[in-house]
Every structure is written in structure tokens, then in C-alpha cells.
Image (cartoon, rainbow, N blue to C red; front, side, top):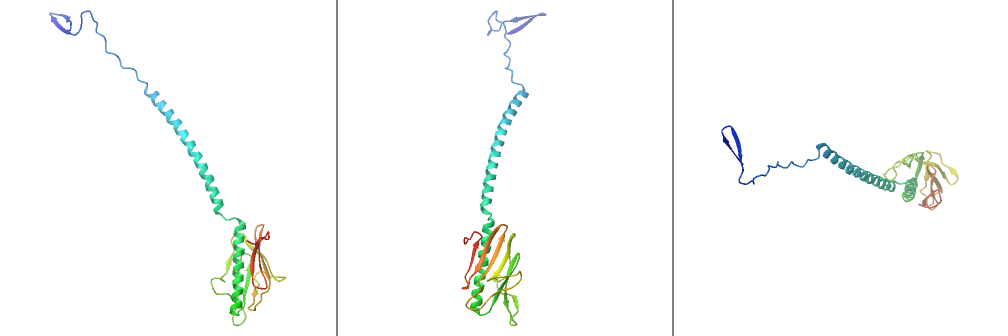
Length: 206
């Protein structure tokens, strides 16, 4: 539409694109958008729900992993019976080897115990007992909780620190040594042929 001025009057002139009698319509208003705060609130609620679900999943996974680690740890850690059995078998093997060494060399050896360990002895040229040489016959300390509770040669009790001689003769004196770990017992016995065995408290050989 063109507007032509005639003096002080302004007379609208119809535009060639607009028909006579048509009214000018205002441009359409844009659709109102949701308030910014409401949009953020909806997003926060959605994120909160998603985060809570993820935390629950993580907690479940952590519980499962913790149980699995506990089972593996229990399987890896030896129980009291296994530890006592190993120590009794080690002592039996050392005593049998020491007896064979004494008979083979013609020189007597001896064994003695303290409550938390034991050692081997050999005789010097004066017949005195001195600490035995060699790594196999070195002094040994028992693991925590394992003690030598009693020892005897034939029917005679052996006191702590008293040497138990292993003769260089072709026969040996029978002996017995008792190891304890709490309420569990292991028995190490030697016969006159020099054979040494280890048994747990229930009489079953480990």
C-alpha cells in the first residue's frame, strides 16, 4: 500500500496486491515456549532418576564382587589343620634324614625343642653337644600358634632343651613328639627302624 500526501491529509492508496475492503491482519505471534525454569526442572528430575538407578546397579555389583573376593580369600588362606599338618610332616622328614645321616656318618646327632621351635645338635671331639652344621639342620621357629607340647623317648619324658640323641648305631630308640595348634594335635613318631611318621590328632596320617 502506498500513502500519498495531499496537503496535510494522508490518503491511503490501495496496494495492487491487496483487494479493496480487505483488512490488514497482524502477523501471527510465536507459540509460547515453556518457561526456562520448568524445562530445567524436568531435565533435573530425569537426570535424578537415571542417576539413582545407576547407583543401585553399582551397589549390587560391589556386593557381588565383595562376596567373590571373600570366597577366594578363604580358599587361599590355609586352615589350622593344614598348617599343623605341614609342620608335623616337615619335622618328621628332618628327624628321619638326621637319623640316616647319623648312621651313615657314624657320628651321633641330637634334637631338642623349646615351646616355639626346635634345633639339631652334633657332638664335637670332646663329646659335647654343639649346634649342628648345615642348612637342613639349622634352628627352626614354628609358626604362630603352634607349640611342641610334649616329647618322649620310649616311655621317658623329654624336657624342653634336653637333647634327644639319634644314635649312629643300626637301630634307633622309639620316640614321640606332640605338636599343638589350639585344640588340634599332631603326633610325630619314630620307630626302631628309623622310620618317622606324622599323624593328625584323629589318627589319620596327613
